[in-house]
Length: 289
Image (tube, rainbow, N blue to C red):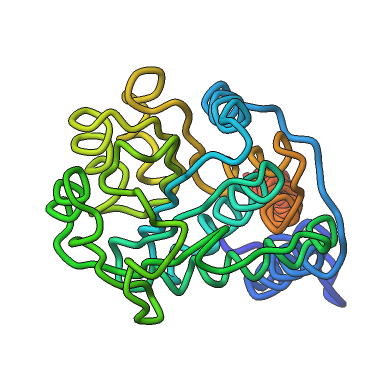
């Protein structure tokens, strides 16, 4: 584009100034838009997808006091998308008095489950619950082997996880009494960022051992898991949007809904700058011609 020579020697017009906005100014606006909502309890109404509605319906239909397996198959880089799902799923479990058994096929999975548990139990609504580790919930930790772990759990869980995350023998944990294989669980929640994760649980846990299962995935993984919804998967939440929907529909507003506010504001700001840039460009081009 030809260089614009301002007609006013003392300065340039407003359109010329808009054409020369430093990109750092735009980055600053985006930064403020993303950070500001995190300091306030702000949320927005989000239209619910079919997959998340199915997920919540399936979880709510699980009988109170059921034995539920929670598999945390992700690590800190995926936590912004997946941790809110984990927290919301645990809160539903607390509300329905599930007996929760937590495991991880990823090395950092047990740590992520502990962090999610800490946030979930800090909710004032559950302050009156008298939860006993080993009776109401347990963290069996990580076991290497990927899908081989799932296959082994289908026949013998005590030998697959001989002790819990703290090193206590599984035979001394009351909640594990009578739990021999995957068929003893009433339901399963899988939070996954990739391999091993939802696909392997569907192929071996659901197809082979008959688990009833819902899943929460990162956004990039969701399209691969969508074909399973309605058959092997009873529901699916995908990415930050799915986490926010799950928080909303389950009545557990949290971090994902606040993140969505920042994301929405950032999108609006980007659109505004795109419009400003295009108006300035076409106006100055017309003047040049």
